[in-house]
Image (cartoon, rainbow, N blue to C red; front, side, top):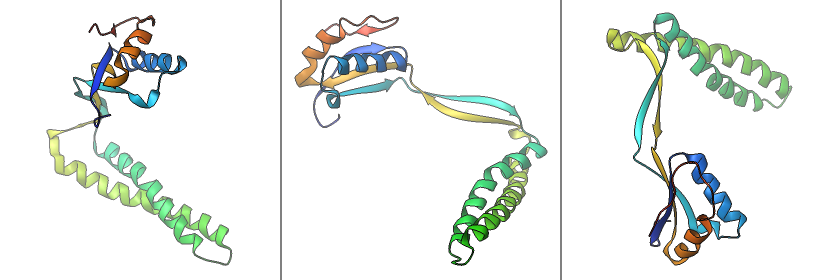
Length: 160
């Protein structure tokens, strides 16, 4: 979309509304490869999910280590040509246990190094506050006309 001149044809407060507008254009036969949804006014949101102490750090480390350990061990077990299914499953079980142990061993020191500076668990996400439906300049007038018939709860066509 950045190679050709583009034109915003509608702005919405939610992604679902912008998605609905593109779906509306698609239903009316508009060339969808010439449409994009741009998120604007992006902000970082960090959501707390719980208190972090040594026990929680060990559990989080074990949870993050068990699957990679199981996968690596399972792949190693597939190399064995005799009884490779039994070998792979048994190694995957051992890898799951080993991965969880290694993850737990790394989780506790990582939490200890942060000290009391950060005693909560959280996850971060990027969230736009507005969504613009943008089309190639060559088909902009048609998109404005087609999108004008769409009923929305917020936002809507941009007047040009």
